[in-house]
Image 1 (cartoon, rainbow, N blue to C red):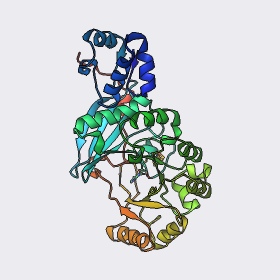
Image 2 (tube, rainbow, N blue to C red):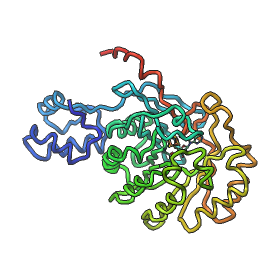
Image 3 (spheres, rainbow, N blue to C red):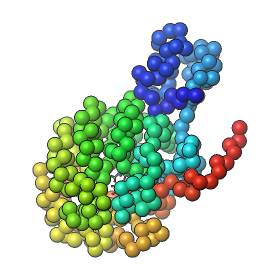
Image 4 (tube, rainbow, N blue to C red):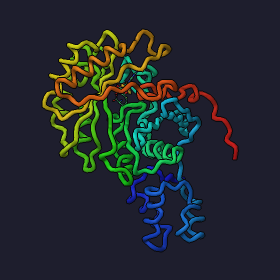
Length: 350
Ligand code: SAH
Ligand code: SF4
């Protein structure tokens, strides 16, 4: 059966047209799914019962299965989703002021192998389909009971979104039906052709770059992708990324003890970002002795000093001790539950 989740309005209407006597019926269904996030045809009370029954036999409205939700003391919630082939991914919901930020995964793993990242250390996973990407948003929205007007979306979960541009593009189209592209951020480890692809989109989300080191040598040491797309090439691409008035590029900088946390590194960073409307997120490394043995965060004083050096040079800086640390829900700590992929699928109660 065809799943209607993850399809843009035009496609939903095309799928349904043969079964609807009146053209506006298919628009009504699209509205229920895209605007009201319906999970079943039963909810679509303005449709004739006969039509609802018929559609139910032909189509599904299917989201990834939520298998576990873990609450953190700081209010973040981590969600584990089981996909239909046994792969699993995680998403995180983080309340901020009166908003809720939803962190979505784009792949069931990551092939880029950044050395400080649990997802990267655990290895590659397949691309998520549009329904699996949009489904994370739909499920987290339902579980938190928050209105989509108050939601920000960040692609900072598992995987490299710009290595899954085809499905990401469709998912963005669907998400933008309800959430303004101004409230969606795509984070990348620096896939240059992907950034160019994003730049060319009509409804362009915001761009975040995982920088994590102030020079090419050190960046290549912890982010192997930097050998393929060196820092100068990446920065050239970022400088030509179209920015509407008031928009900025976010730079994420994971602070690692003794590696990239010196005041001189902050100064190098200032020079690197000169002239770019930017926002720097300084993220003290989220430690994980099991998957990242030997990798440590700097002490609070060093973190403070680093942030202050950037701010004093005129950069906009936020220091973000990762949210959800106690439940390993921080972005970059997401790992799915990889053992389920080989386990037999448990029978679902009918
Ligand atoms: N692949 C994309 C998006 C997902 S990673 C990217 O790299 O941008 C999301 C963010 O988590 C990245 O900015 C990454 O630098 C950060 N991150 C990874 N591991 C981390 C860790 N151990 N502690 C803190 N942040 C981490
Ligand atoms: Fe992949 Fe991003 Fe983690 Fe690097 S930081 S391994 S690109 S998920």
